[in-house]
Length: 493
Ligand code: ADP
Ligand code: GLC
Image (cartoon, rainbow, N blue to C red; front, side):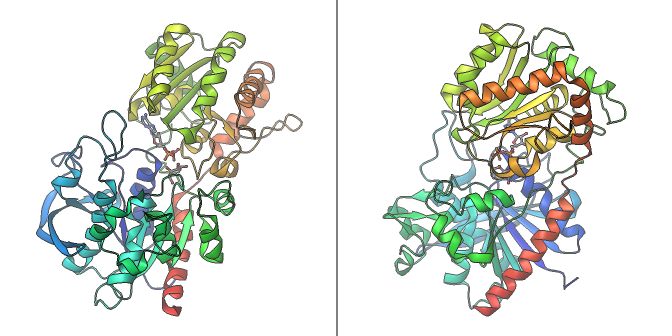
């Protein structure tokens, strides 16, 4: 045990305040796990319109706070609350940037055009906050492109600063498919000095690349599974960043996410119709019946139900499922329930599916946490045909709920799901390699036939799956080790 660390984490999402995907789950859980190891952690995020100040007991904390952007100072306010586990959370209140309907895009799924400014501002404001409240961090921890400029600001502007001068930085890449690549017209506003607008730092084919800048300036970089760390060292999987990640050498690593088993555990989950444990699965049957009723499916517990909970984005490979689903529902005795939103064509396709396959398919287009829990609990299998998956949380939740994952063997899906072996009857799920509708069709077929024809194996897999544990404590220890390496790297530089 070394000395306890002061850690400032900034993120565009954090459970329970604002969420679009797994990033929010991670930033909602990792700080408390680090705190339990004895560290001081604060979280900084935007005060979006959707965050209910009363519900979360937000209190005005600081006003005004001046943030230098380019060559002018902008003003915002700061609100504060204490999250689960006793972690202080600070909200940057800048109405011109965050008082809007969505986190990143409007209702038509179009990105806000000023996203580079919004999140450049958040990054600079998070650093300023440390100064204004006198929090002297040992570590600045950035997450994804939205806060990836913090390491750059730190080195460009705050290297000599009393509060921030000694801080080392760490960047976690949750998704390399979103890099925050912006028109160079934003560069003056971001205030990162034109001397740094070079290919080895912030420039990318004439544009500014937030994530690349973060990789280049951070003292330590990680992604959210060991497999994805390897994959992103190859040109096919890294969206142009492989050379920079390879240059980091041992300072680019994979740390698997944990799961918050207070939220995602069928034994204590109060959102689902009935609780259950590996020893007594009767509650799971009840959840299945309730799910079939809610989605107007044929209420028959001998028919396997497969579930999807997902952002409808290219990454998730649900177009492959769309291409295969007619044949699946025509040829196999199986049901589908899908919850998701995003891509409009996929929303339309899956939204219409129940009409085309009444009693066989159900869908909910939108975002709904309760339905997500119902699907995890009530289904027999869970589908993730992802083209790439840095970690993936839903398959890990599925394991705990005894809902066997059917996944493409990529990234964190490969690391967390053990392939079914028909010879030994062991495994926790069904994996395929090829990103094609055929592979989706045949792997679902394999799972469905196992459900009907090798029932003992299925039941044993459910038991094996429910015993898996991906704890935040282990991940937090890995982050602690990485932080100490970041500090060493900073001192050596
Ligand atoms: P990603 O971060 O790429 O979206 P993850 O599997 O890491 O993928 O995390 C997704 C998280 O978002 C899970 O907690 C999942 O339950 C949740 N989620 C995704 N889509 C929805 C939705 N439409 N409604 C409710 N929860 C959703
Ligand atoms: C991302 C990835 C997902 C990961 C999550 C949390 O959005 O797509 O695979 O689980 O971040 O790290």
